[in-house]
Length: 282
Ligand code: MF3
Ligand code: CO
Ligand code: CO
Image 1 (cartoon, protein in one colour):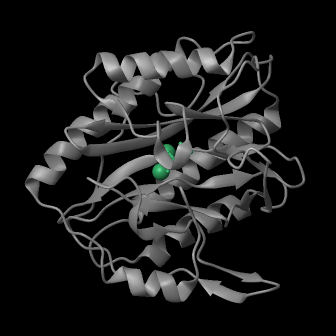
Image 2 (cartoon, rainbow, N blue to C red; image 1 turned 90 degrees about the vertical axis):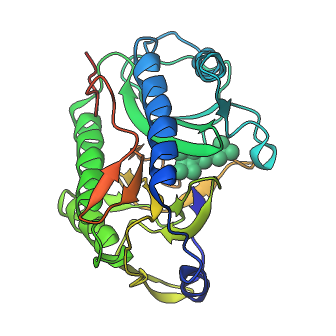
Image 3 (cartoon, helix red, strand yellow; image 1 turned 45 degrees about the vertical axis):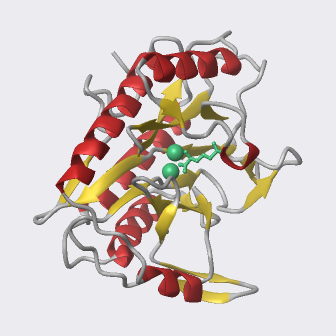
């Protein structure tokens, strides 16, 4: 995800949103499917005691064995095939020798490049048995993402996506992270437009922010990838320059799909071929 930018910037970039044709949809179906298969594969390996760099190696090997490239390796100096974000880590967790513990909740985010097209998707996983509240956060985050995606059709706007996500997540007592957002993608990894997962919010320093009214048009490709916190939405990035955590150390969850706007609605490119939408899997 990209850092959220100022509204002026969003508006300027809105004119530059690319519209794709049938070959774009075909390319995104292939890339999205492989990314989703990778997340299906990794579910069999998530359990207490496993190192997150072991999971990352499995992702890298799976992607390469399938003739694709991990988009994150070499991206802005990042060196891994996945981001693995555990418990209060919001996103961009770096795979390491750290092992999973019973009750951990974690996000695994992979982006693959197939014939030049990017498939970007993430899901939550459980190591062992999570607490009831953690499970409720994960289920709410998945539902929030699906409601955001459900708002997508020609004539609707980016605002409608954020509204659907924020209203649902906040009604459940959780908060929406503002500092990271979804993004256009296709033959570019992070493209216009920014997809913010809120409708509006007030920042003490910069005032009122409202999601852009950018109309959705057939052929737009982008991700929807809300990060939802159990506590406050505030983010801190650790000294490694990547790992983003909740400032109040509360649990955070995220799901991500890559989607395309169709003539009548939306196509999700990264649905699980196994039907594994959210944990527990199988
Ligand atoms: N896959 C992430 C996203 O959803 C981006 C990760 S960039 C990395 O946009 F460098 F941190 F891997
Ligand atoms: Co993304
Ligand atoms: Co991603």
